[in-house]
Amino acid sequence: MKSGGFKKDIEIDWSEIDAYQHVNNLTYFKYVQSARVDLCAQAGIAISSQSTGPGFMVARTECDFKAALNYPGAVEVVSRITEIGESSFQIAHLIFDQTGMIAAELKDVLVLFDFATNKKVAISDELREKLIGFR
Image (tube, rainbow, N blue to C red; front, side, top):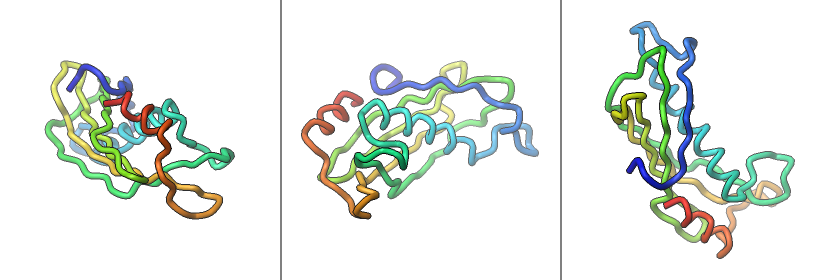
């Protein structure tokens, strides 16, 4: 799955290391959050409360940890849209360490949301096409 999709490179920060001298489990979610926000911004989904367009809410996230990450180092997060529904879509993420080994597999379900009306909204045809571009 390393080709295609959306890619984000992230340097591992020393502050992310836990008592066992590897990257803390919560940090894997932080890496994916960074990729998720950038992917949504590129698709035209609002990522700021200052925007008038629809944004997203995370309805579900899950992680299968495969390998420890260490400092110093870097990761590459590769994200792909795997499903698109009426008002929600799923993103599958792989976190690769700097040797190319998979460190984690994550999945998100995001709901397109209008924060002005406090309701979910349908994914437009235009947005659907943009999301398809991240498959």
